[in-house]
Amino acid sequence: MITLKNIVKEYEGKQEGNKAVDGLDLEINKGEFVALLGPSGCGKTTTLMMLAGLLKPTSGEIYFGGRLVNHVEPKDRNIGMVFQSYALYPHLSVRDNIAFPLRERKIPKLEAYERAKETSKILQIDHLLDRKPAQLSGGQQQRVAMARALSKNPEILLLDEPMSNLDARLKLDVRDEIRKIQRNLGVTTIIVTHDQEEALAISDRVAILNGGKIQQYAPPNELFNHPVNLFVASFLGNPPMNLVKGTLEEKSGNQVVATNGFEYVLPEDRRLDKTHMGKQVLFGIRPHDIMICDSTDMQAIKMKIDLVEHLGSGKLVKAIDPQHKLETMIRILTGNEIEVNSGDNVYIKFKERKFHIFDMT
Ligand code: ADP
Ligand code: MG
Image (tube, rainbow, N blue to C red; front, side, top):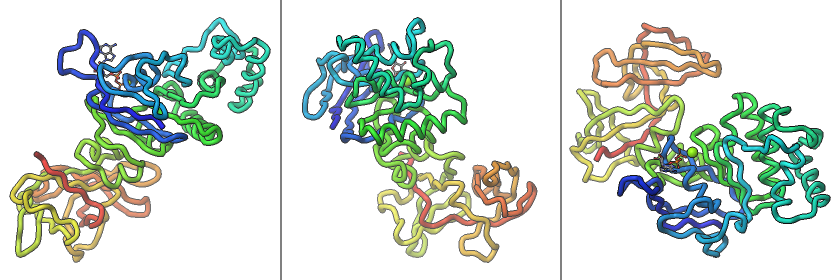
C-alpha cells in the first residue's frame, strides 16, 4: 500500500503560499489502478515525481507498505515510470532500451536480453527488438516505453500522460492494453491525466485535484453520481452538467428552489439542511438526466429549442426558457429517435433522483 500523508510541495522561487501540492492525503492499495485527474497545473506531475523520488516533498510523508521512503533514492524505490514524451534512447535498439534499467542494475547482458524479450512478448513488440526508436510508429514507441518501465518487475508503475501523443483511435487500443497488462501483472499503477474519459474508463479510483488539493477520491461511478462539490460536478461530464442559480425557499411545507418565478419542488428525500434556507444555491442536472415530456407532466417546464447538435450516438439539444425564468441555456441529451428541431417548443422534466444541489458559499 502507498500512503501520502499531508504532502506539501513548494518549488523554490515560487511565492510563499503558492503551493504546487497543498496538503495531499492519499492511500493506494496494492494492485490498485488509480488516476490523478485535474486541469493543467493542479499538481499531478509534481505528485508523481515525489512518488518516483525525483522530487522531495517540502513537508509530509510518503510510505510504501509502511516504510517511510521520503529519503529513498529513485533507483531504490522499485518503480517503473513512463513519461509523456516516452524519452526512449534514440541511439539504442528496442532491445537495449528495454534492457537498460536491468543493465543499470548490473544484471548480465544475456540475462537482461532474455528478460527484455519476455517483457516485449507481453507487449507484443518482440518482432521489433532490433529496430531503433525512429523506425517505430507512435503506438509502438509507447509500448517500448511501457516495456522498459516493466522490465525490472516494478512493484509500482507510474504513468504521466502516457497516451497524450497518440491519435484518438490508437489511444483507445493502448488504454485497453495498459489495463490488461496491469491486471495480469497486478502491479500497483498510478496514472496522471487531464483526460476525464481516460481516467474514468481505466481506473479503480480517481483522485480529482485542483490547486494542489484533492477534491474527491472515489471510484468513477461515485464521482459522477455523487460529486462532493461544485468543482467535481462541473469538471466531470461531457457535455457538462447544467447549473441553474436559485434560492432555497420554503413553500407550504415543501422546499423549493426558486429563480425568477421558476420553482422546482424538492422531493422529500432530497431536502437540504434548514441552514441553507433563503440562501443562493446551484441546482445541477446532467444533460442525460433531462427528458422531453408532455405539458401535463408534473413540474414540466416549457422550453424553446435553440440548437440541435448531432453527436452520432444521440442529440445534444440546447434549449432556452422563452419566459427567461431560467437565466441559463439548458443542455439536454436525447436519443436519436426523438424528433426535435431548432425553433420547436417542448416541455422538459428532470429525473428526480438525479439532480444535485450545491451551496454557493
Ligand atoms: P500538472 O502536472 O497537474 O499540470 P504540475 O505538477 O506540473 O501540474 O505543476 C503544478 C504547479 O507547480 C504549477 O503551478 C506549475 O507552474 C508549478 N511548477 C511545476 N514545476 C515547477 C518548477 N520546476 N518550478 C517552479 N514551479 C513549478
Ligand atoms: Mg503534468
